[in-house]
Amino acid sequence: MLGTAILSVGGALGLYFTGPVLVKLVYNSTYVAEAVKLLPWYAGAMVPLALANVMVNDLLAREKYGVVPWMVLLAVGYGFTLPWVLNHHPGKN
Image (cartoon, rainbow, N blue to C red):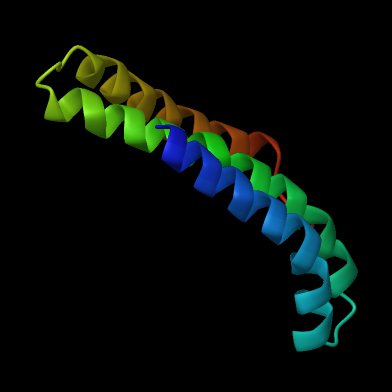
């Protein structure tokens, strides 16, 4: 868990500092400024996702299946919430 935390935080920091420079070098567009603003948020969201993935895999490998109903409940909740959000908060076209 500690190794995953160190790697994911290091990767997030690397994306935070080098991402804007690399995106500006690769793409010449008006959307680059908006995309660069999202990189720190994306990097920050990936850290807990990576840690949760390691924790769930560890629990399942130890045959502690108590987490499975909660994961199914989360997936069902996501499945019902996503269409509701998309219908009530459509994107700008």
